[in-house]
Image 1 (cartoon, rainbow, N blue to C red):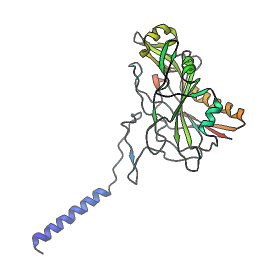
Image 2 (tube, one colour; image 1 turned 90 degrees about the horizontal axis):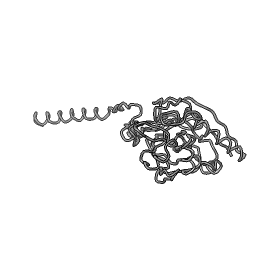
Image 3 (cartoon, rainbow, N blue to C red; image 1 turned 180 degrees about the horizontal axis):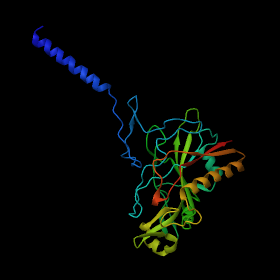
Image 4 (tube, rainbow, N blue to C red; image 1 turned 120 degrees about the vertical axis):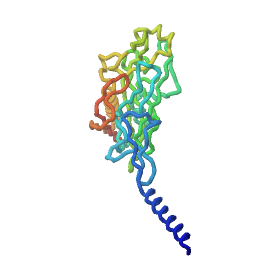
Length: 288
């Protein structure tokens, strides 16, 4: 072999060594700012090369989600900037009652969707808006179900007085569990409007709101444009009352319902309209 040929072989071997060394280096995960929208929040590479923002560890009741807050959601109102909401209740993976059975037992909690609306006091409003959360290894996903106390029509009637409670629900498969865990984001809300540039209650301006349906929105109790007396903390109050509703419904069915409150690490401390939320999460187990 000529000197030139030997030199070409040596250079090729060196290049191959450098290339292999480069391939063996794991890429570091990009930093994620709290509250990054799901569409832009980066996934974390795993050892297998698959990207995931999923659970890190599991308990008997659920696997710890990538984030205990929802992804940021935008609003049509400049007075309410994009916000995240807390996952503040978990229906345990150890439950032997399906979500459908539980909803039937609750009876007053009706399914609502993002594609339906209702007319309340002449005001046309959408039943629910879509939000995303990351509770599985597949990353962020839109809620699987949404329930409103009283359904779309009566629920929106309740919103005129600040007594409308609703939950968005995400399912998390858990090894050994038939139904998996269900994560809920619960909140009490008031139907609010923007009038003269300020958020205020829709009930104080029903005729005006009926003529300006685009100005109507649902504000979380405790924030601007809401009633504060009954539910000063729209997030924590809603989670507590939903847990109580499950316990009451379960008792009527003869089911065993237990609950505990755990403290979690959140990326945010306040939700829609700056309403604060705690690090508490209700974990409810329902055994038939």
